[in-house]
View (cartoon, rainbow, N blue to C red):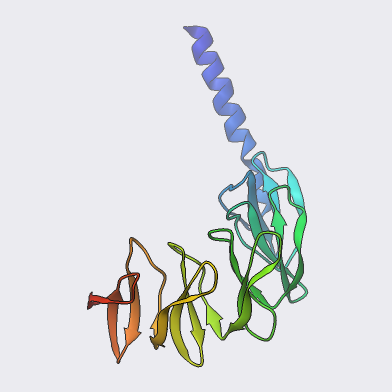
Length: 194
């Protein structure tokens, strides 16, 4: 029994001491894909679960990992790191969001589009704004109006809204005709939003 208490005390001491590394950073995010975003001053990098610095604090902005990739910004351009901390998609975009359904929203300076995890453009840079995919649909803005496209970039809900949100549980909140509405995945009004 005393060995149990001794091993428990050692375990507590190790786990308590193991977190001292966090004090050297201004912020430490949750560990995802084995790496956590850390920041000091205006620079960001990534550490492993033990606090070992894997990616130096060289980025101006850094996002948490999503689907094994993390968006990072340096010198005004965004790219993506893979789960080993290596730059997998070069720093080339004016704006970037996290991957969802193996697609990420990026802006190349002429508009928003979507790339795959290899960095290949799969939906052209033709939108004024865009949200990430959710439930295989993405809200996109063209000519001042919002609509929805599917994973292949095909318009599935017409561009008729002043704003459109992401789908959750088959429903999305949109602004149409001066009213907030809830629509289904076919674009049909379910109710007025509260």
